[in-house]
Image 1 (cartoon, rainbow, N blue to C red):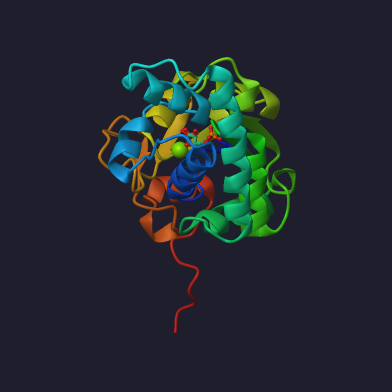
Image 2 (cartoon, rainbow, N blue to C red; image 1 turned 90 degrees about the horizontal axis):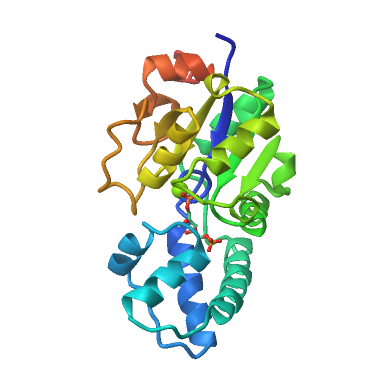
Amino acid sequence: MTQPALIFDVDGTLAETEEAHRAAFNRAFAEACLDWHWTRDMYRDLLNTTGGVERMGAYRATLGTEVPSDATLRDIHRAKTAIYGGMLAGGAVTLRPGVRELIDGARARGLPCAVATTTSRPNVDALTQSAWGVPATDIFDVIATGEEVAAKKPAPDLFQLALSRLDLPADQAIAFEDSLNGLRSAQGAGLRVVVTPDFYTEHQDHSTADWLVSSLMPADLSDDLAHLLGVHASAEMPS
Ligand code: XBP
Ligand code: MG
């Protein structure tokens, strides 16, 4: 088979962004004079609901209240996105080990690289600006983000949208994910999936993944995956 296109999740996969998201939510709550504060333990459960607005709605439901209104939650989420963008511009997040080398190497070999993420387009640009100093379109051939689909992960819509924009069938691409919701989404679109769990997802069952790896560094890839990606286990020269 020819080398596959690569479709990347963003949050948790390209970078451990969720602590920045959580801090941005908490700052936005405080600025809105809302007495919500999400701890790490709460956030681990809250992440089962993908999408920031949906996550706030799910939390509101646990409180048994209908306030703040949906419109207010959307306003708070807009503020949260601005806060998060500022945090990334200030260098709050770096790429996970191996990500830069994998993507830069794939691009150099002409493999299409795409994004399929629940988060919004400004947040994808914030990450590529911070990590590569360029907008997302300079790194990724195709970008599919949460505001473009009817159903977020674990629905397959985001990966289906990325595949249709790549103009490729699912068997000519591989998805990279960190979470069970993401794994289900990618598998629902018929993709083979590499899962690299992170701080917030390591407790989940990712056993149905095609590859389960601790990082995307060459040394952590299985031989078949490294071969498929055209990655060599060590770039070191023999001494
Ligand atoms: C990540 C998410 C996102 C972020 C917050 O899911 O669920 O909602 O936590 O982003 P995945 P927004 O990595 O599976 O795509 O607040 O911009 O929605
Ligand atoms: Mg993720």
